[in-house]
Length: 213
Image (cartoon, rainbow, N blue to C red; front, side):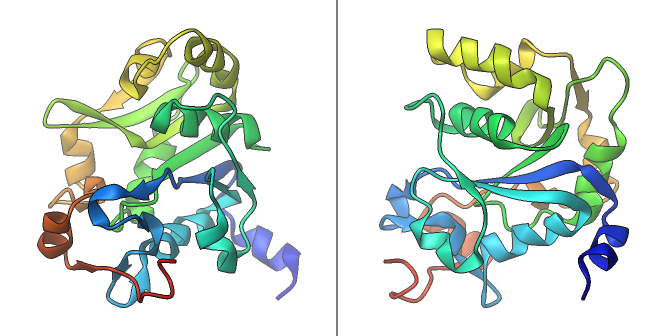
């Protein structure tokens, strides 16, 4: 397939899908969480389906080795030791596009329909879009403008703010839970897999031994 044929199908060429890989799941035996499997497919592979909407795809990982088989462009944290906030900041710094769709690598059930809700909520004067579920902002399934890279970097250099605190510093549009339920009635998109109990609850399995090494 020619590259121009691919580009014709991209709905949002001004957006980068940034998969926030984070570290290894200590409560899951140290496995790289993007290698967890749902219906025989790695969670990372399921998240990468969203990349078909976007003009670019980026992996944020300080240790990208476990994901080498996908051949993704990878970036590491710019401000180290800041966890997920540092990961989203790294995506903003590393993106070549105006907008970044940030999705955690342990969220197996995000659909293109859910992503389109976020992408469609952009507006003048808005530099971040996120859902609120049960009264809490979901910052690892959210849309960020590249212009946030500098102020967020400064905030991370001077302290350890949470992603929700960083969002409070931005011109964020927070979408109500009903906006997500309209395309995802069970709110599966915001499910994160972090514990053995999560594996059983959501039908997720550990990867084969050789995949988790």
